[in-house]
Image (tube, rainbow, N blue to C red; front, side, top):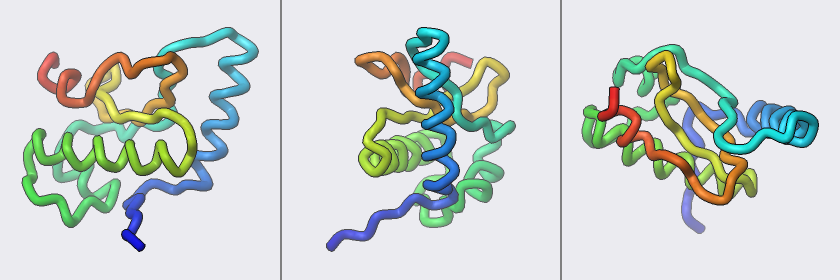
Length: 114
């Protein structure tokens, strides 16, 4: 059996946040990307510490993007929801619940746009 890593993400907390987000979507008819968590930084070293990504190979935006994309795919499969990392409007890393049919942006696109 392959090892599944969720690093510094708490699945119980995410399940609770997803439940709240789904209720908000139903009540307010929201669509798109709903922010579940913001890590209030875009500093690579801080993000590695916050999310326990110590096995990251390249400590640059490309390496971090690859690791976060893999992590989002793993957690999406576990939660049975589409989740993604992207940069918030404030320039911090955020973890989003994607309610639409397609993911509207990738982390790397958001990072390079800033």
